[in-house]
Amino acid sequence: MSSPATNARLVLMSLLEEEFASDNFAIRPDRLDGSLGHDGAVIGVYPVREQPNPSDRMELMTTLQVQLFGAWTPQSDPNEVVDPTTAEQWAARFRQKIADYQGVGDATVWWFQLDGIEYVTDPTGNITRFTATVTARGANPAY
Image 1 (cartoon, rainbow, N blue to C red):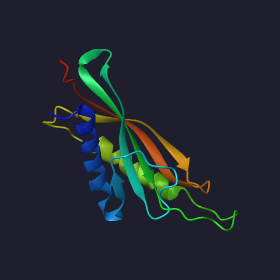
Image 2 (cartoon, helix red, strand yellow):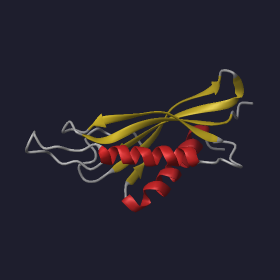
Image 3 (cartoon, rainbow, N blue to C red):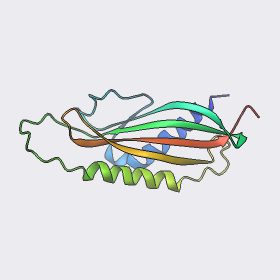
Image 4 (cartoon, rainbow, N blue to C red):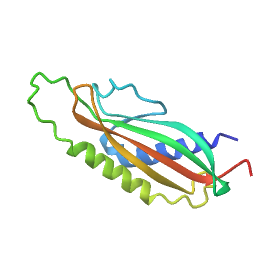
C-alpha cells in the first residue's frame, strides 16, 4: 500500500502532464531550486503535509505544492518589459484542470482544493512562474 501523499502527488502530476503535454514541460516529483527554468520550463510537485480533517477525521487532507517555472533568460537591459500574461495563463489552465477533476472511484483523492496561487519572480526579478498550494481531499486510511 502506498502513502496517501504519494497517491495524491501522482494523481496531480498526471493532471499536469495531461494539461501541459503540448508545452513539453518537464515534470519532476521534487521541490525546485529557484534557479531552474533557465534551460526550459519545468514543473515540480511535492508533499507538504497530511492531516485529518478536524471536523471529519475519516477524511485525510494532503497538502501539495506545485511549482511551474517558465523559461527565463538573463536580461541585459533592465528596462526590458517581461509581461506576466504567460504565467497568468498557465495558472488559469492549472486552476481549470484542478476544478474539472472528478475522483470517481478513487478513495485517495475525491477532489482537489486549490488553496492559493502565488506569482513569484525568477532570478531576473520577472514574473515567469507561479506556485500553487493544493489540498487533496480523500479517505483517511487510519479509519
